[in-house]
Amino acid sequence: RPPRSTLFPYTTLFRSIIVLATSNKNKLKEIQEILKGFPVAIKSLSDFGPMPEAVEDGETFDDNAYKKALHYAKVLGVPCLADDSGLVVDALDGRPGVYSARYSGPEATDWSNCEKLLGEMEGQTNRSAHFVCVLSLATPAGPALTWEGRCAGELLAERRGEAGFGYDPIFFSPDLGKTFAEATMAEKSAISHRGRALAEFAAEFAKVQAWLRQRMAEIKPPKPDHSEFEHNDWSKERM
Image 1: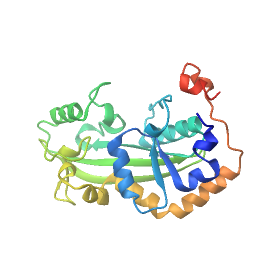
Image 2 (image 1 turned 180 degrees about the vertical axis):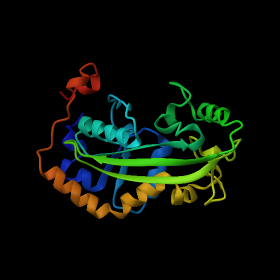
Image 3 (image 1 turned 45 degrees about the horizontal axis):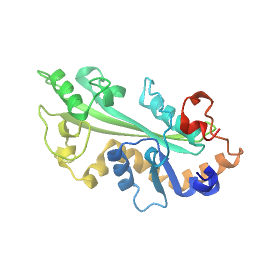
């Protein structure tokens, strides 16, 4: 393979490309839609070779977003944007929270997560819930910027709609008068937690570019650190 500098020229990467620290196609599509029209190409981890996964063991959305962004920024040697998001249910003391994606277990699916949540909400009169999304843009050396978005609604007792993903079919948005799964992507993006966080990011995009130029110019681009991943063949090729 060609050297990394040939694949992604370091001096131009952070000006026109942002690596999104996810392989989730739905999340990638949603973010690409929100940032459509901006001078940036959104790449995902699927555009790169195999690499060690980040450990999401933080106690808050902020913790996990930064851990993911910094992990992949160090592995790839370029700035990375990560998000951690989830559903916070008042009647369940904030659950599923940071465990939203794997709420029903290690092999969790969107369907099984919704089933577990619906079961726990049986008989509950307080159906209030809100989505939270924290975005973190980290550089390989460590500094990061953070944005947060929230969206309030309530949980239904059964699924409605076929679009979206995650808990969208059971999350009713008063702003839309429908569930996220009944909304178009444009409707959802306009008021969703991720849409609001990304709107803040987009509003500061020029400042973000200037910040990245300054941060990345302060140090010599580091060689990606694969010392912890010697068992990984993809990493070995670049040591």
